[in-house]
Image (cartoon, rainbow, N blue to C red):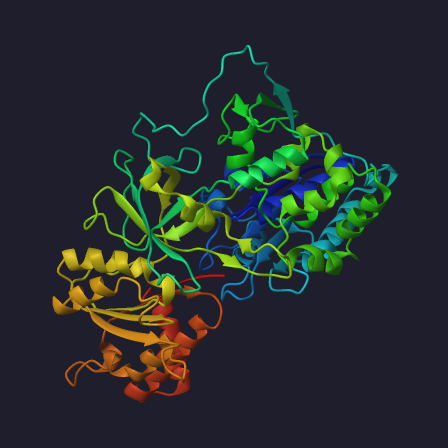
Length: 598
């Protein structure tokens, strides 16, 4: 049997699955295999019937949803009309990337595995279920899974045993070649343009929304800086409903851009064009020609915590013995605990790593920039306003991420810090954005009660829903809101009070630090179980109501679920098992919906 052509297809939301797919592709190149790697939605899924060897690398998003760049593939693959056995010639393997703090851990990989078996594919090894919560991260599963995969491939294709692989320290060809332009060639300013056509904004064509205001809504001395931001989307054709999210692509800080260019001895004003060395497309988000400043500011994620693959690539350029040894250790399976101590635990950035390895950084060739540094990933924010209350506007509630580790310099969230730094009072500033459907779906029936549990910035989508529902005359609205202090971080207080006075809202608050005993939203839910009780004519078990929860993915979701089940037991007189079943039924029918983040 001749050597196979390997196809690696990935579904990636934050770039991790893409990075893992590219890492496997480099291993294939070192084994001198022909390899293609691409997002699932860029691949014509009908061609799967003629492929011989495919690896699927998939993450899971939201509440068990596929990533955005595999949704079309997902819909096609689950068509009932696809004949059983249609993939009987396909050898494949599935690697899932997930986080066990979410209830539907690696749901996409598990479901894909089951579907491929139904269609007759030969799955070479058990589905890999990598877990971000592991002490060593996803690599604790990825490394042995890769080893098992290559073992299976060697068994299937015995001729591979005679191939002499490329050395690990030998650089592979770059994906792109840079062509620098001289000063005499016509210069074109690189900036966001408002599209003249009528297309709806998307990731490849974001809309440059003008920032209207950027207000801090926490008390000035409060430790957490939270911003209420409004953006003007006039002329964008953007439409959204309560529960939808806005996607934004942030920029690197000017001082980081300057330091990066100094470390790599790049002139930020130099312009270039890119040409791929194979069939890879030039990134749509990058203009041609482009300045080095625009590339570093808007595309390369130099503020990210680097992945292991970064050290693998960096080590191939190292000529300094000490640096080469350290990079090799960080790249090895045995050195992962050391790497986590150096990089992941203190949240050390790419830029800081480059400064720590000055000799190797000086050896870097510009053609490898897009191989070494990942693309800045868009960030999602729940929309905190309704188009009915604020036409042509999008409002968001943003907690500015800033924290200390053992490193001297405080850690900052890229997008939240960038947004906080923008000041529309100093002149027009624009944020590239687009909107996508969220996971929360509110009921259309006017009389159906809606119970919303939104601690902290988790209240954002509920402000959008309440603005929408009040304009529709829907009064059966209950909000449980929690924060640290009534005087420091009680978001949108005056708006809730106005809604209460107008008869559109019942509000329960939990201010956790305003008294000696901490009080959270789950305590208020537990205390107000009668909300679920109905009337004598219509007992609680027949009341149709919706419960929505929006919070981080730590203890809060589980605690709120426990409080709901306790309320069912106390009010309805049911057993613990029946309460558990009722909540499961509500979730299945969409009457209990949650949106969590880590």
